[in-house]
Image (tube, rainbow, N blue to C red; front, top):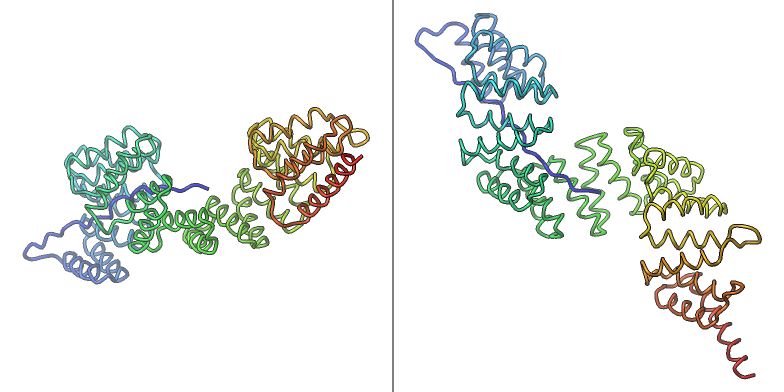
Amino acid sequence: MTVKLSIGMIVAVVLAALSQAAGASEADSDLRVASKHLRAGDLDKACQASRDAVAADSGSASAHFYLAYCLAKLGRSDEAITEYRRTIELDPGQIRAMNNLGILYDKAGRLADATAIFRKVVKAKPSFAQAHNNLGVALEKQGHVDEAIAAFKRAIALKPNYAAPHNNLGVLLFESGDPDQAAHHWREAARLDPKYASPLVNLGALNQRRGKETEAQRLQKRALELAPNRVEANLNLGLLYFKRGELDSAVTYLSKADELRPNDAQILNNLGVAEYYRGNYRTAVRTLMRVVKIDAGFARAWDNYGLALYAVKDYGAAEKAFKRAVEAKPDFADAHYNLGVLYAYNKKPDRAMTHFRRAVELNPKDAEARHNLAVMMSRSGPDGLFDPEAELAEYEAALVLNPDLAEVHRSLGIFYQTQVGYVDMDKALKHYRRFLELSSEGTERNEVLAWVGEIEVEMARRNGE
């Protein structure tokens, strides 16, 4: 699970000032009514008054501008785009209409159109800092990072107290591998606009990555005070609490992020994992099922879905999920490992060994995979034997990787106690005793205690002889 940064929203639509010359026309009167309703926040009435102005004077660029603005605020973007285009046809020098049209193109995903019109704006008015910022956002979304950085820097040069380009430049500097300079710009954005949530989200994410969890939590919560519906802040707080093991809080924030951005596969995957670790396995199954329906190629989600299904003992479905993970990502070591565990549980050692071996090939430093591969070697082949030397080599490799892996010591104790040609009771006792030091209460611990007792009695008897 990863924290996410947040690039700042492009500037809000800017309402053009109206000329109120003496002897204003009927359209001008309607626009004053529209302006009054806009200030009062009554968008429907403002929109109707703007329509009245257009009806009174269809050649009024201001009337079309006001109507476009109201439609955009009401979320009727297609209609707003039409009206802004009409505004520009009537008044080709209407820079703010062009800027606002670019914003709507950007929101609609028409990035090439947005870029083209923002370029026209900055060419017509090079000092328009907001348009340089907006151009940078559109360029960044298309992967034109160097040009976007230049646009943000130009916006800052033109208007040093403008917070948005500082935040946005910080995001690109971070992604380019310069987190210290990124933090500088985020701090500057937060200083310039204390009510701007984005730089706080980003500074919180940076602190989170650096292990400064207390500061990260403070910043994300401050961001949520300013913008309670900020998806990234809820997501990052959920991930922070998950890392701390505070699973109830993790689920609370991740659920809020899911509510705010439904059907986001990454958020849902994180939520499903949190529910799994909270022990809500059936909820995890339902949540992770949603993920793989949204993104059938999401290998990690298929693997997590398989683990949740395994936990509710739906082994057939779990096997299919793990296989789908491997299909989506053939070099996915964890999915091969989990298939190995599933086959081992279902007493299919040869299949289990195949997947543990593949997991080890893909991740040679996985001590548990090496241990499990060795255990499957002991259960495979004729008469329960496969290759004792290879089995021992895997146990020893696992211990090199993790000397404190209790299960390896238990397995080595069994190996030296029972394996023909390798029996060595002193080594068996050494590994059993180390297992007991590392393990807690449980059936296996009681078994090992009994075996230690038997060996000690037998060794004492032999020494007495």
